[in-house]
Amino acid sequence: MKLVVVLSALLLLSLVAVSSAEEFDFFYLVQQWPGSFCDTKKGCCFPDTGKPATDFGIHGLWPNYAKCKTRGELDGALEMVTKRKKKCWPENCNSERLKLWEIKDLVTELDANWPTLACKGGKSIEFWTHEWEKHGTCSNLDQHGYFATALGFKARHNLTGILADAGIVPSDSETYFLSSIRDAIKQGTGFTANLECNRGVAGETQLFQVYQCIDRAGENLIDCPLPMQGNCKDRVQLPAF
Ligand SMILES: *[C@@H]1O[C@H](CO)[C@@H](O)[C@H](O)[C@H]1NC(C)=O
Image (tube, rainbow, N blue to C red; front, side, top):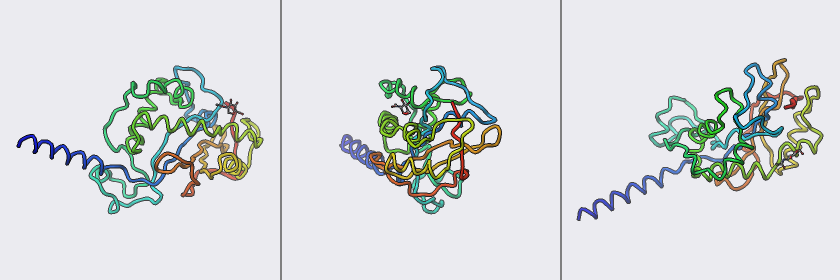
């Protein structure tokens, strides 16, 4: 009799766990240009693995809503804890810690493609941990799946190569039309992406991050469903790194 009670309690718990699958609409795969990260007042530091390649590096894989939600539209206790009026993405969905042994086989690839540039001790694992806790816990992917998915999409489309093929190469003097960057990415990947810029030390506008959009299953690129006010101008730089 007791066993039956315990078993039904377990069944109930697992149903609750299943129904807590995160609802979101698509992923952003965000890649950052290291030359633009470093050419800021704040600057950058290289990770303990050395200077990263002259290539976009992954910032994160972020579940996102297609339409920002107000508190009334959100369900789930975790969501209600937040004080923000509008939420455009879920974050910190559970307290699962990143376990290095879960992603052991990916570490070499992660060091090369997802390096930290923050001046915080040079350990990229701290960057990955932050991304996992804030975004990965909402992704409906397990730890290995989360990091492998981001690496897989980055490997599929070499953004640095796609831009180079369109004549857009790193330079501290050249400026490029934002529209030609947009067109090159559309042509090279088949899908529209969103672009974000930042300001260099001298105030120049630089391409900082590329946001590619992926369906909520984490399987296919899609056209980005939302426009982005990304602080860009008609002409931008892609600073050397
Ligand atoms: C991506 O393209 C750049 C520029 O063409 C090239 O130097 C780099 O080796 C490529 N990266 C990979 C991983 O193929």
